[in-house]
Length: 132
Image 1: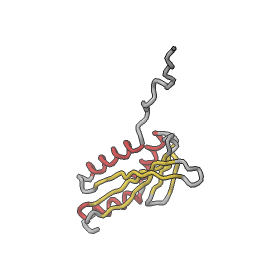
Image 2: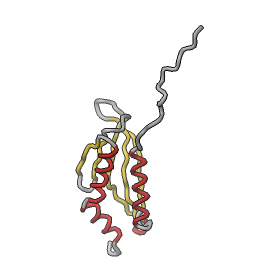
Image 3: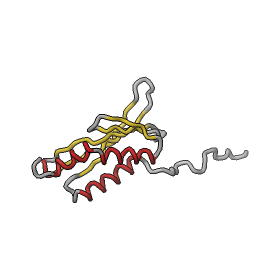
Image 4: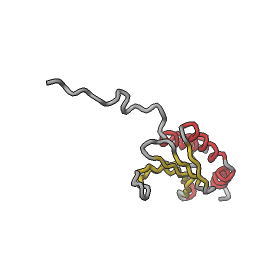
């Protein structure tokens, strides 16, 4: 009897993109280095289901902690994607604004806008201040 051939594609399990969580974790490292570890970042992961569609999504929350202030923390942004990864929703918690990134490049651009936004820099400078 003839063997059944493997019908799965040869590139199964190989991604040519960086996962959003990987990009966020790298930004945590940069923030900690820039602040000389005065600020500590964390990327919290959770899963949820979208209402009627029953589609499962992955949520990432980018949290900034200040250990010297009794572990004071605030959420900077949230990211949400389904199994397709892109498009990805990027929500700026501080400005309560949302945008959709269709690929890795536009995701990185969205993060860059959030990190350089005046509201973000004011929040970070405030917790880095000796007077907070």
